[in-house]
Figure: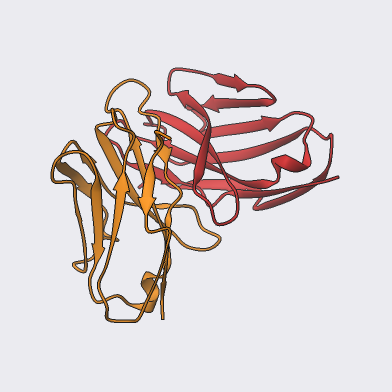
Length: 114
Length: 111
């Protein structure tokens, strides 16, 4: 399968712990996006990369959140000192940087903070 | 700041009915608009993408229209089926990569 993949699919952690999620985009896509979605809401933009450069970050991305895409391929999203309010689905998407810029989404990582 | 609204929030129809889902946005300076389907607990599946210069796109029983000047898009589903039951989301995109989503319309198609 050559779609967007995310790992893990589910993560349960205790408040105060650090968690890291991984996203592997479609191989030829140079843009990669992170979103957060809570129940009953649409996804909220967190940040995006073009190749290895992080071009925009939402104000939602507090100091406890950091994202990287070191080689312009896969990306990681780390949340430090998790809080119960961080419980959400974290979605990754990828696209080309030109043309239609159609975004293709992965299955998401469901985070539960106890 | 771009805001996207989807009406209705929920819709229940009998199988076979044609239906329209609505999406409105406040800033008409968009690059494109994308409609997605989301099944419970899953990721998003892209249905249709309309560029800002286009008026509509069709795929099978789905037809999406865009009126950029009035800040509106509609998703028309013909001959609805129980398998169409899902949440439908619209996203307004800038060419700089940022997407703003509505909160979706949850569709239930009753057999």
